[in-house]
Image (cartoon, rainbow, N blue to C red; front, side, top):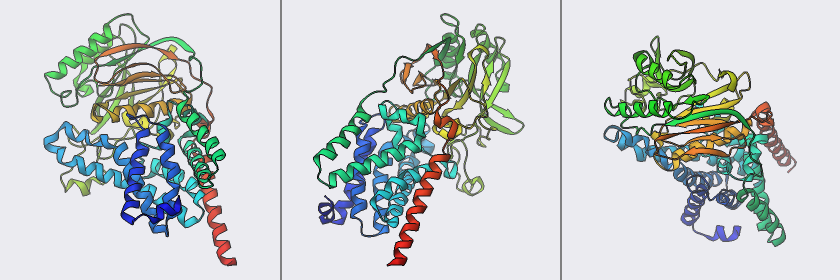
Length: 494
């Protein structure tokens, strides 16, 4: 197998690396061909084993990464089409540069594995750079391979190992399968291949979730991003929100999505009063922009039945180039503004993860949009909540891959913490997610309406919710440094 690959001309090797990465992306939403992620990771050991140098191995890894991220993150072009006249020209550059930037991590993983020596070192370096990708430069762990596993049996490992531990498990299993294929042992290949198929095809083997007696209403106004700030059209969306909130039986909690109210909080007392009254005694938690001194904040507020704000949470993990411009003084000279920057100066950060108290329902950890992407942020609260809640505006992400991948990440956070999640999305997908990451009720993309979803009970704290990323980080670094020391010792002896 390795000899066949080496016999190919360089251009064919490089093209196959890109195709291999693109094929692995088919495991992610909206394609859901989950076994493809293991196929990519298993065959990823082929160009590594065929490389003649650290530089060539790094190039192979970068090309696999470019193919993977170009397909997985193709939705990134959608935000630039909301105001196409101003931002449309940036869309292809955004995709190419983002895919190329993410591919550097995988290039580093392959180069490091080749430098360390044995092919199995990729099973350490690959999860190590995915861990790095989650933290460095504020982090961007979108599209990590474990994200593809949320609806299958293997995804339940997130509760014990977390995303980076599951990535390690996937990489080790891929290496074992590659070695079995190299040995031409049909028995070994069949056994390991069968394990992979079972893990990627079987659904989570769990019974129905235990439910609390409480009902959460998830309201979805379906406000297109290009229309939601329009003074005329925004009235239609506000009427939907108020009508859906006041309909049917009274729930225990009402959730509106991120920036549901198209006004700053201090300019919307009448709307907030109407929203509180529509709740008919149930607290209404909604997304709204507010100003504190000179800072613009993307916030969630909780209203009582009079419309009075009783609790406030401010988004603290902002989207680079979406909600703020890094190194603003540098990029301001180029005329760049944050895409979601509707008032001119970008957003300020909130104080950090914190829970809000909903009385009989218990305490909830609010996550505003992008914050649900970060496993370590969700585990950063000083006290464990009873449930998670995400208010999001996925209208930015287009109508296919983006919203579905964002939903998958919400499912990951539920599994990792052993907590249910109530998710209200502007254009969808609004959903109640149980502590095993399963969607119990949902409202599809581009639908206006609401669902009254029973709130599942939380599970006992998971191992990952108590340990976080520290154990897997220590393990990966220990194995990598030990391998490096053994290599240096063998060189000295030689």
